[in-house]
Image 1 (cartoon, one colour):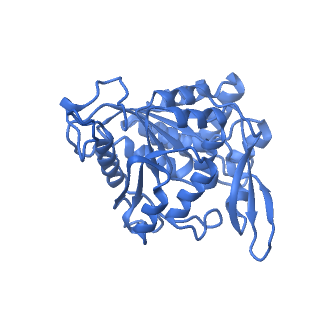
Image 2 (tube, rainbow, N blue to C red):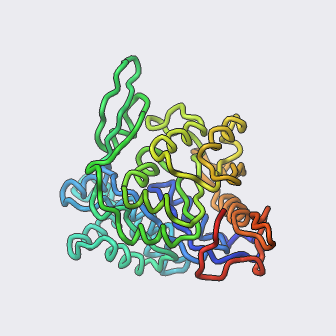
Image 3 (tube, one colour):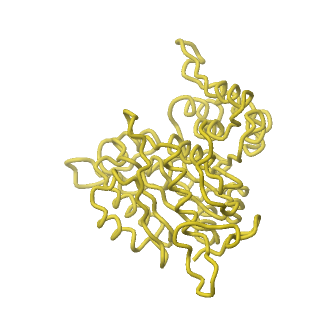
Length: 356
């Protein structure tokens, strides 16, 4: 892993990142390169029903472990032991037998869940093996199912689709999603982390199946609405085939607001090259942002990647800029600092800044 991004002295921030899959992995990797961040907590969706996770979920009735495993791997210590255990939990069995396609970390988590039953303890156990620089929590302690209303091409009425894989791959336009059960209990530790955070990040990731589900768990949604933390929305680099095919960046925000009308963000961060019409994005963000909030455009894509992927160092630098501008500045007017934070003007370690 590369070294931390150079930055002016900054406050020690507790950051909670919500999401799942590769999007959350990218966020966590970038956060580890931010010297302003003192503590990282990943809150992970638990509605996956495909691949190894889906098989273990159906056979054992456990939380789907795949996205949880990926978050743990992203936070693994960058030393010999951490790299060894990270590579081991990410190892996926080949062949054609019963183990084919299973990641070793999925099996390890499944074994711990069967033996102890408490997902938070299981994640802390594996996190200890990996020497994780942060904490991984499920958004709920029980596996959830996603249902969606999908408008199929050429048909006037919408169809109901059930299951994360089905929602992500069904042709047509997803209009809205909800969870089964509809009123799932949030993980208490995840709720507490959001309420005690300095910054909460939502996205990037599969918009309907990894990002929006956090807003559909009542306890977690209420924590997001009431936390004193700054809320930052990270947009995807590109639409996803099936799930958000044809979506513009502003449509992602419109869908977000449609599922959580009361949610207000302090910043929206997007890749410059992924926003062909910046004026439209600014207009779409107007109702989502708090007074004084803003849209940030930065070059955060990995230009050398064959598929859309964030560059960890570039994303870390952009996040540092956002964090610095959100922190309160010195002076009697209480205005937000325009670009950076110094120790003199920073909140004390362990205390939440009073975001605008």
